[in-house]
Length: 227
View 1 (tube, rainbow, N blue to C red):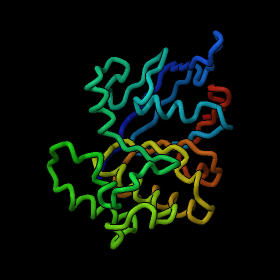
View 2 (cartoon, rainbow, N blue to C red):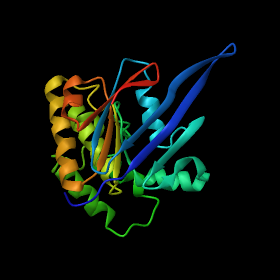
View 3 (cartoon, one colour):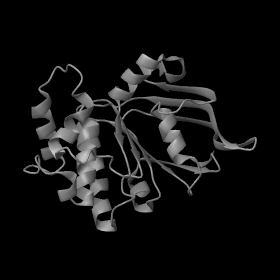
View 4 (cartoon, one colour):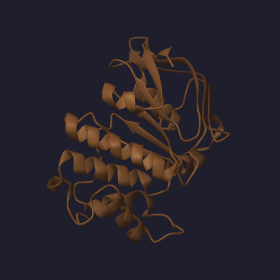
């Protein structure tokens, strides 16, 4: 392991969403946990249990209504809009639906998050190296439409790694894949953790994926039932 992953602390966090007609959905309720550096944490639970919401709160895509989230000692709830944008760029996101730009090649999709910014490394070289690292050497110029689902997810993982994140958040990364391809993605994520030392938080319905994690957090109706 070459790096140390991020330390994540979640303290008494709650998040509700309006449903209309004066009703509210309590997506996350009074959740507290600590994720040690380099840990792979699987968040499981039925649909609507709050898995993706908790992931989005840690990723600062949403703000909690109550409670505090700290990543490496930095309190997310106190950050300005610009500081939040900087924080989001410092972590990696992997999505169930890949979220690749269809008109861009695999290489350009990996480059997309860092194109507007100055970097200390050669962006194109790093993107190519990451595609090779996820098993896609030689596919740099392929459009997403010419890639299988598993290959598209590998591009998504390479894109998530372009900024050398210490924290990787993956929302149902095997949800659109068959079991064999999903197993390959799980193996890839675990090998990347060993190589890059990241802390990885995965929201998943996949029991096989969850079984490979170091820790398992189960949610039901927004509350922790097992950790």
